[in-house]
Length: 88
Image 1 (spheres, rainbow, N blue to C red):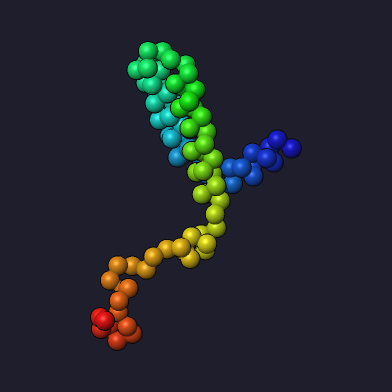
Image 2 (image 1 turned 30 degrees about the vertical axis):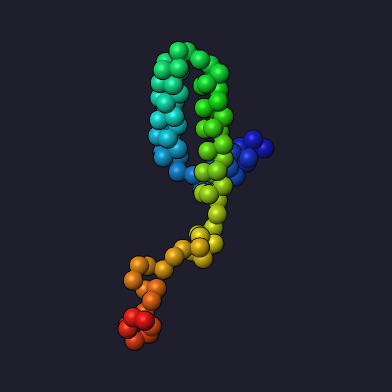
């Protein structure tokens, strides 16, 4: 049961990229702990921000690409041309 949940949650996640991001976040938390005068309250606030950011990142990774293509803008320079290639 637990393995099925992890398989569902990690379906669209690049594990190597996630590991690199997690390592950078850990270094950031350690640096914040040192720079904030060893304030655990500040580190806890930052950890809450990290959890929210990871949740948003997971949601974005699970949006099907065809929905994102609908939101994409056309390439620059093609906005004002007609079929003949003339501007205007």
